[in-house]
Length: 221
Image (cartoon, rainbow, N blue to C red; front, side, top):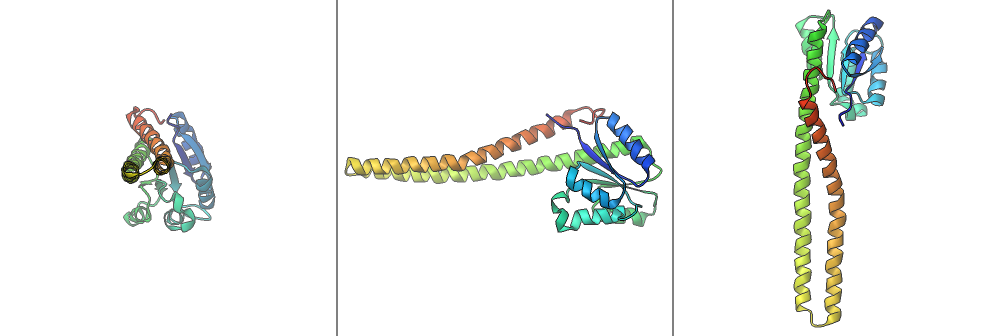
């Protein structure tokens, strides 16, 4: 089941927070709010949003500073891939370039048109979903390679054990070698189980992403 996309809206103007909360909630998004840059960082750590809509001019920490910390600080390394759409009343090309170079995914100048903002939100979310799917496939390829290697190793060990059994001169020696072969197969099962569990998780994640991509654009889920 695909869950709602969680969007964190960060702005020191309450009217903007309320506007985005009402509009995006109606479209099915899970909307959370923060009123300054410091609160934004704390909320990102706690909520793990799928997208941050970030005003640039704010008290305590500006949008630029929040983006820089999120994208470069070791303390926030696990959140560095969080997509950011930055808002600003500054329409200078230099300001836009700086925001994008810091790691923002998009830069929108106030005043804005909500239909355009919504289209950009969906575009950024789709882009990150596709990146996740690519990473998912790469992990599955690596997982498949690891499984093949484990299987090849176990087969070689088992063939060796069976060859020794065939050459055994007595029943006791044959039994000992058979027990050794059984242990090798048990060891293989133990190595394969976590790989199978990981593969199942990756498959579910891939299915969730594919389902989300097939949903009509009028839906946010």
